[in-house]
Length: 153
Image 1 (tube, rainbow, N blue to C red):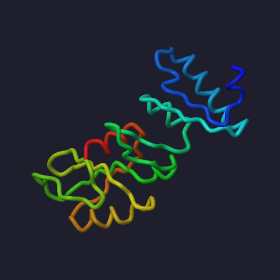
Image 2 (tube, rainbow, N blue to C red; image 1 turned 180 degrees about the vertical axis):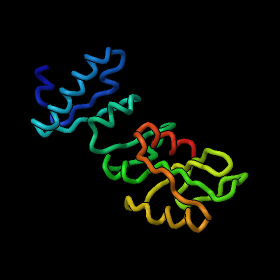
Image 3 (tube, one colour; image 1 turned 90 degrees about the vertical axis):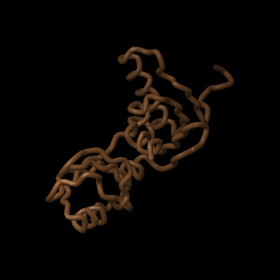
Image 4 (cartoon, helix red, strand yellow; image 1 turned 180 degrees about the horizontal axis):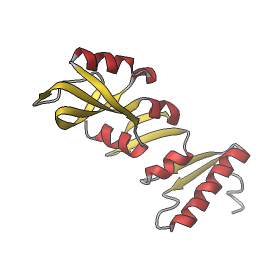
């Protein structure tokens, strides 16, 4: 404890692994207080991305030993959307959509995970209209969903 008193950089690897939900929340609260009150930097490594999402302001995702994504949390969340398109007539295979990554659906309704440039859905809406479809639903992705979208390209 004497050597680590108020470090400038605090490295935590899976700090809440194996803990019950109440204790897990307490640890996350302490991390947030440390950052806010002392202006410290915390490197938080975890597979529990919902926890990371609550405390992080910058993200680096690693898969198979490679960094696959680095961004601020706000920019990252603004860069991905789940977009559901409805086509006038059913289609067998989903048409390619600007920024579209993963696609699910059938017939007249298809859901895409899209990369959005500068948080502007205008380009995606325009691309959908040019394919004869309309955007019927749009929603943000969780950090977990963003990781999966980047792994399953």
